[in-house]
Length: 143
Image (cartoon, rainbow, N blue to C red):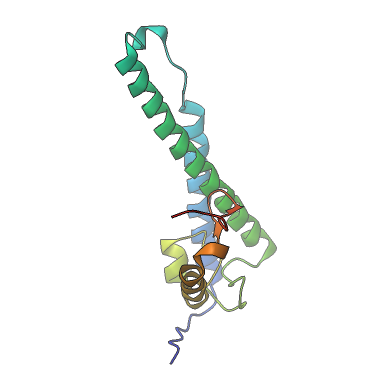
């Protein structure tokens, strides 16, 4: 038997609160990206161990930056949904997502029920899933 959680549509005050949160996230990511420096000083690379350590640190920083860019895209998309009036509605079933879920994850595009179904489907069909962060199919992945 399917468990169906009921949520109500957002009030104008709740929408404005979540919009402010999204704008804050957008500003934080934008400001942080201005401070990122992936360059290396020749003085930092005295030997191969320093070079390897520097490369590893740059790689970790680049991965973190990529995650931030992906999140920034989600934030921008959520702000666009606020402006067009579809924010807080599930993209799959058009039911309300609910304030509690959006407070925890303001970029949520699906209600909890649809997200659970989506994740259950993804877990059972590993070979046909889209890799979310890269946008590529992992059909031929080897495990």
